[in-house]
Amino acid sequence: MTIQWFPGHMAKARRQITEKLKFIDVVIELVDARLPASSRNPMIDEIVSHKPRLLVLNKADMADETMTRKWLQYFEGKGFKAISINAQAGQGMKEIAAASKDLVKEKFDKLIAKGVKPRAVRALIVGIPNVGKSTLINKLAKKNIAKTGDRPGVTTAQQWIKVGKELELLDTPGVLWPKFEDQLVGQRLAATGAIKDSILNLQDVAVYALRFLAEHYPKQLQERFGLEFISEDIVELFDEIGKRRGCLMGGGMIDYDKTAELVLRELRAGKIGRFTFEDPELLEE
Image (cartoon, rainbow, N blue to C red; front, side, top):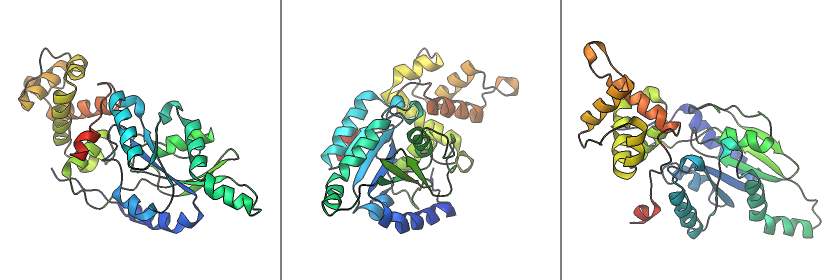
């Protein structure tokens, strides 16, 4: 399965980000805590490499806690300031403002020493689609300013948003990149909902997700679908899940499309439990 998705508004967003950088003090890069490496856009490094950056692992409530701690240590070791949050519940909001101020303290201290009046920190929020940027902005601003949705591509324009007196945010549409060099990246992004389902073969995506869960989180998979055991044969696993959840067609045949949609819906909603697709130790290897 080859996955690519690069709508026209994303190319436009890249140009807009480049144009706005001269007004920006710090870049807040939002990633999915369940796939911290795959949900980082390599184009962002090219575009904003010279700006101070705060790496924010969102949806930490849905990720494996042990893995999240490992990822925070990994990013800190690479020279990034990194924190984990749950934007949906508003957890970690104060840390974002504090960390952003800390990243630009030296710059602002120099400006103040020159007699420049203190102002709010201007931050650019970047990230791939469906990583929770709009939800984060609404929580920081304490009102519904940015559009939100559980599908990619909801934000299609840029806007400035004030967060109290200390922070001003520039929201941007989610930006994926033109080509995934590693198709595993595409599969992980597809499984977590960062790519529009309408362009995917959901059976293939569900196969990837089930194989991963069977290997790394078998107990959670068994408990969620009431499985007596996890078959190594993926068709048998599909059959068992479909049968237990009533995903059937005429004559009692398993509806594989319906089963795939069910698995992905429950995976994305966190109903199968907390999981992380990537281990920083394996990434280093």
